[in-house]
Amino acid sequence: MTTALAPTAASTRAGAAPRRSVGLLPATATLAQQKVVAAVRSGDAIFALLSPVVFFLCFYVPLHRRFELGGADYAQFLTPIILLQAGIFTAIAATEVAGADARAGIRERMMSLPIPRISPILGRMTWVVGRLLIALVGGLVIGYILGFRFQGSIVDSIGFVILALVFGLALSLLTDAIGSVAASSMAVASFLMIPQLILVLASTGLVPAESFPGWAQPFVRNQPLSVFADALRDLSSGAGLDPTAVIAWSIGLLVAGGLAVAAVGRKQVTR
Image (cartoon, rainbow, N blue to C red; front, side, top):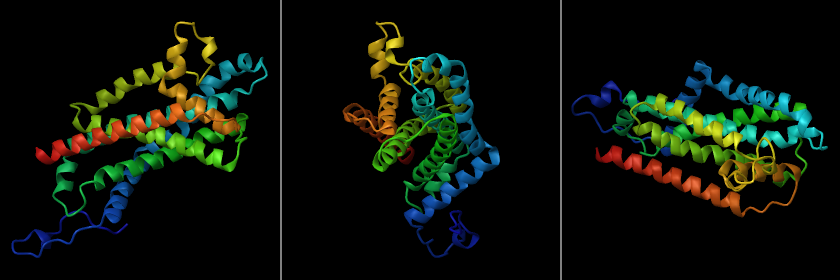
């Protein structure tokens, strides 16, 4: 990418002609490229690829024999929650990236440049989608090796990928907003590991809802990770999917994330 976002010496001299505005797409692409390069250099891209593999094996090795006594394929059952967990890890990483930008004063510098105000968040979310795709590759490859298969139509398979991306993107919008205003984004990211663990373990992603005590089953069935995991499982197997719950959760999370990002943006503009 060759689009320059930093002010030049000529443009800052007194009497210099106004700088020409940079379009939304070039500015977003340049900012996204910067995040991608940073992720590769820091090793985050490798973590995104390998963490689904590690967590898949951590759950699969001790649980698959017991699960498969009933004749089911545990790799087919487990893959959705591994991909959703990877989406949560991407959202947690987005918290740290947004916080690092805030601490470095990058947003203030971006606001002084002739680029659309929405470009920085679009650049970060483009990086988020790229990270999610890397994690999907890692999770699907290990799942495929151990028995996962797309058994539905091409439309079902595409819907599977889109739904996994929507989940991670919606959460990342929320965590990006939190990281932008938090006093310590690293502390927030560390704290978010706790609800992540609780929601993963108390979901239908690892075992069916019937495996939980009766009093816990309503929560287990209806919490967002279970709703998304069940929907992904239906799409991968080609079973009929009732989209009501997962669409409602998707819209709700996307709207909440969008509103949070907009609120942070307004606060920064009026500051």
